[in-house]
Each structure stands twice: as C-alpha cells, then as structure tokens.
Image 1 (cartoon, rainbow, N blue to C red):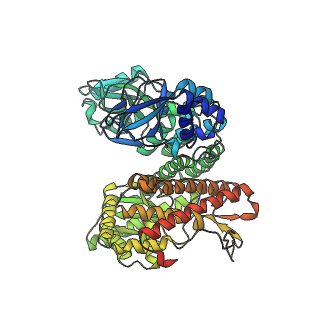
Image 2: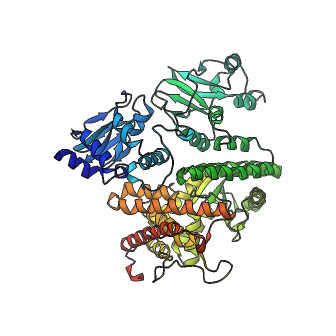
Image 3: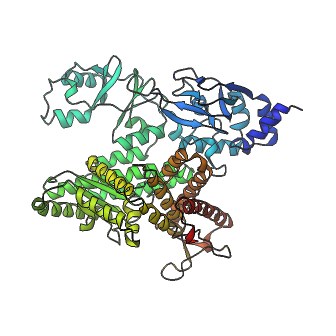
Length: 629
C-alpha cells in the first residue's frame, strides 16, 4: 500500500475539481504528485520566469501571489490551486508566488492535467467556469457549469486576445503632423507615443478629427498636446473577456500591451476594439461601439433589444452570471451615457455647473440584466441660493429628457418615481449630504428603505468628484451614528428564509401575483441587504456589487469564509434563475409560478434559502439582534 499516495488522495478528494474525478483517476494523480516544502518568504515562481510544466495545490500553509509592485493580489490557502491559468496560457508568469508562511505544496504536471482532468467532463466544466470568472477553483460549486473545455479554452472570450505585435510608435518630440503621416503610411488608426520603449501616450483617428480637424490644436505642436495619457496597459496574455471589460469600463478603443502588463516595461503590441470585433461579431464591445455612433434614441432601443440576444447566448453557453452581469451593466451604462449626451443637446444650453448622474438600486450594483424600471438620481455642484433658482430647474428638465429617453429604450419609468426628474432626487451636493444625514440619524422604516436603495449608487456620467464627496459624507455620518447599523441590521432581517413551518415556499397571498413566489424580495434582497450592511460596517467605500461585497468580506473576515462563499453561490444561482425566468416570460422575472418549476429547480431554490438563513444568523450575532427571534 502506498501510504503517501493514500494521504494525498484523502486530501485532494475534498476539493474541486479533484472531487469530480473517479477514484481510479484521482488515485493515479495522487501517485504522481510531487510533494514540495517551502519555507516562509521562499519564492515558488517569479514574474517573467518561464512557465513550468506543472501547477500547484496548497496542502498546508499559505502562498501569496504578488504583482510587480509587490502588492498582494491573492492569497492561496488549503485546497487552493495556483499556476494553472499560466500553465494553460503558456509564456511567462505575470505574478510572483511566495510563501506567506511555511507551506506544503502538491505539484501536479501538465501531463496529469491533460490525461485525467481535462478529459473528465465535470472537472473540465468546472475549470472553464473558474477561468472565465477569475475565481479560485476551491471557491466554486462543482455543479454549476456545463461548458466544455476539451483540453483548451475554446470560447473566444477566454482565449488570449490576438493583438498586433508591431505597434506603430513615435517619440514625445514628434509633431502631430509627423505622427499623422506615420499613421497614414502604415494604414493604422492609432499611434503609441513611447519613451525608452515604454508607452506614455496614445493618439487615435478620433483625436485627429476632434482636436486637429476642428482647429483646436495646431498640427505643428508636439504629440503631447493631444495624446491620451497615461495609457491603459495589459500583459501579453490578456484574454478577450478581460480586454472587453477593460475597454467598456474605461470607454476606450485601444489597449497597450507590454511585457509585464504595466507602463514600466517595453511596449510589445496594441489591441484595438476592431481586433475584438473580428473575433466575435455582435459582442458587447461592438454594441458599445454602435452606441457611441448612435444619433437617436430609437437606435439605442434597437441595440438594447440586441443585448437581450447577447444575454441569452451567454446564458445558453452557461457563462458565469457575474461575468454576464458586468457585460450587460457596461452596455446599460454606455446607453445611459449616450442618452445623457443626446439630452444635453436637446437642452440647447450646456449645464450651468458640473453634475453627475447616478444609477441606484440593481443597476448601481451592476446586477440589472433584464429591462426593469429605472432607478437613478442627479447631483450637481453647490451654488448660491439665488443661483439655485435657475440651476435646479435646468437639471430637472434635463433629467426629464433623460428619463423619457431611457423609457423609450426599454427601461420603464419607476412607479415610485425614484428618478432624477423627481425634485427629491435631483439635488446639490450639500442637499444630498443633508438628505443622507437625515436618513442615517432618523432611521425609521421609510428612511431605512431609502437607504437600501440610495446607498447602492454607481457613477455613470459627469463629475466623479461630486460622487466621492457623497461617499465620504455617508461614511463619516455612519461613523458618528453607529446605532444606525443596528437599525439597518433589523431591516435586513425583515425577510426571513422564505419557507413556511411545513417547508413550503412562502408565496403571495393576494393581488395580481397571488400564489406566485417573489424571488427578488424573498430570496435575493436578503442577501443584498446583508452584504450592504456588513460592508458598511467595515467602512469600505466603492464596493457596491453584491458578489464583490461578499468576496471583500472573505478577505476581511476569513473566519466566515464558508458562509460568505455560500452566499455568493446562492446569489449567483438566484440571479441566473431570475434572468432565465424573465427572458422566458418577457418580464422582470421577479414573480415565479411554482407549478412550472421542476423538482430540480425547487431544490436549487431551497438550497439558496439556507444561505439566507446562515447570513441572517451571522447578522443577529454581529449586531446583537437575537431578541428579534
């Protein structure tokens, strides 16, 4: 008997994807594993080191993954896999792996990966989801995905992007005319400005049209006068999905590729939006490009309808729902930004002062996949009382144009009037600060309800500094009114796990949705409310997405990791389930006819309710709310 292999087998069988293999497969792997001991601060592999033909599983201890700036990117502990993404992509490592404490590692060769893991259907499906969502394999639910790996990453979104490896460049001393001539001769739409072979700026055709052709800048000036700087840089093995998200998030069409992914290393390529579109037609990037070119709201409506097709395609491919939500959210934001630009043009007058448009509620959390009603607000610069008499009416009129246009696109007007066109939700910075302070210091039921909506806001358009002022004020006010979190905790317990004493689903008793199950109020919102409460208690700003909040909580409270992972998986299941129901019934997916559910669907929903119970028990203990039982 091989006692060492038996011990390795007993350990690996507790973690995915190894627990998806047959006993024979896993034991064969266990016999081939190399056991490695590393001392504290010892390096396992380094940035720019050639990738080895093996990956690692942490048996004991902890391994830190660090960026070039020595920033801790991830911490891998018991059962976590690292080095696998690099192994499949090949090339060199882009992170340092170093022991945070004395550790024991299991080293597994690429031959073992190809022979036993990628050939196993369940294990390969699991790895696909792990790669696309950029989550550690030990944190994933083994039953979630049905994607195929077949030994390689075959979805375009997961492949390394095919970028131009001969970027056209010029120096900082070059004139704009010289740069334009170089672009023309090379038949390219962009040129990267380099200094010591490192990218410091970029000029595109758009810059030449908007800054030179209009006469705003003299063509004899140096390129520094019109270049965009700093540039957005990424490593050579950037995936298509990462490139799409980067372009959408930063509203840019070109990414600079460097040796280590930072501006401090040599430029090796340029990746354009066109490169992405060639790879996959009608993807999120191409839709956003169309949005930017749109000149009418009807065109935006057509694009948003096509987004539903993109959404359905992603769901059929079983792409992780958090990735899908980020893509759809980016499209929604791009549509809103274009709507605001068109609405400002309608006003025939530029905004009198700086302002910002906020998405609130589910869109503010990047969780609005379906065409539900609008939730938004507007904040503008503080002005004198006299000036406000003309400034506020301007922004109210602008908001009406924006809300009307969004309703034409497909986002219905909010029945509760939680929109920027409502004078209550169109305020100066000081007025918003006073509003938030009133809600926090007087936490009655109505004010708590407003907090749950307006605390989940996200910047969409305008002056980011105004939004930062609001966030700082909210956290300062909460810090001086700590009892507020207890009230918010009570509010988070208003919807207990939605099962009756007899383990039946709690459904609506009357009204239009009688006998239907409210998946939003009874299952999803308890998880949303809990994540918001807990992240506020840690004074963490700018983390609004529910999944991201729980991931941050895992980092802050590793002792509660299992509970938070349970909540993440439950929320993703519920979000996917609601989205599928909404697409099938052409509605918001909020109310579900239980008679239409399969037994499997019922069991999946009931499992999610256990996560609600677990997180609510944690809240009761944390904020001493057991008396509510």
